[in-house]
Length: 182
Image 1 (tube, rainbow, N blue to C red):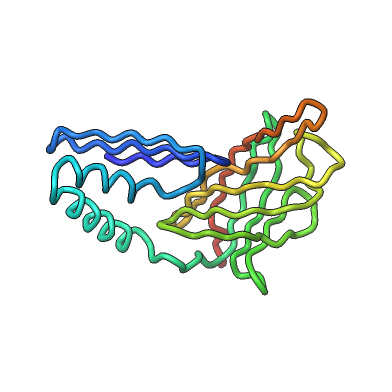
Image 2 (cartoon, rainbow, N blue to C red; image 1 turned 120 degrees about the horizontal axis):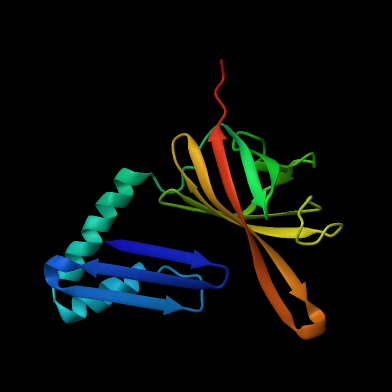
């Protein structure tokens, strides 16, 4: 079993190998790929297992989705903003690159795109109709799991309280479905 959770500025990984009676738990204060570190730990404890694990993960990743190839088409759905629903449209076919429309707002270009094994991480900025703080520009960090016909994940709004020297994220649940063309 492998669980990999990443959120703004941190990462966690739990790797369970019951057949080898091994478990590795990694917590990091950075967004990084912890699988390589976990594999190195497993290899140090039980030589050969780490190499097999890495090869197995590479086969799984190759089957899961081709790295570097973004989805195509348009997805529509909603963002759950603390009980209120805001319409979303994510268009991967837009030129020069993917755009996101939140509510009745203008389409916004998605930037800082990272695509790996079906997970899309990106950011989008603009004056969005979000309850975390209206009438300000928002910087949303997107962490989305992209399937053939659905996209699920989170849009996290970075909010700053400069008076108290704090910065935190407000996560909003995102669910989109592929728009079918008739």
